[in-house]
Length: 281
Image (cartoon, rainbow, N blue to C red; front, side):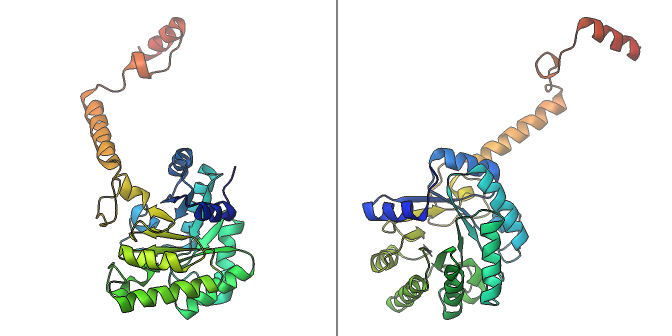
């Protein structure tokens, strides 16, 4: 049975934690759905994790849609959120609605996510929600605002900063968002925001009191090793295992240990083999 926003709201009501991971391709999404992940975020983090960009800024709508479509094919019954990339919604309400609609119409996403809690961003949320699309807000450490924050730094580390984040969260809820992601804040700030809102509040580096948790899948399986945020728990070292397998393959090919014809080659009849060997002579 495919999950909907009603299921997520019901989980909040019953106190069941929501599990959320990023995913960027068919295979990853397939295994995440098999594992029972509640939601998949096709994040613009794919720019760094999958496409090799230094930041999320270069990611385009077309790139996001390609990866969203792949994730949907891999996880047809999971709630999928498409991350609206930098400058796909900031310019105007009309552009925001048009691009959000592409996530829904072309990639079959269940919702979209926007970063920021200022008045202009809340206008975009209101515009998108007003035409019947589900919108997730995102405050705290917001990568698309990293330049104004002086880098990827934790937010809300004072009472005044926490109040500012709470004000943003309330504005986002009032604008019509169906859920909120809070990133990179002290646990007490995550608890404050969660307790004041009536929509699901998810956290990534926001402590244990939110209604659910998000992690970048490549961080938690040890695939992306450029850096590891403080809030990540590693559940595997997939990157090391892949490197080991690739190295062993190279060694086997160079040493003539792979392929082994009796094991890895297609069989033909002795008569046909004899004819081909005669052709070689």
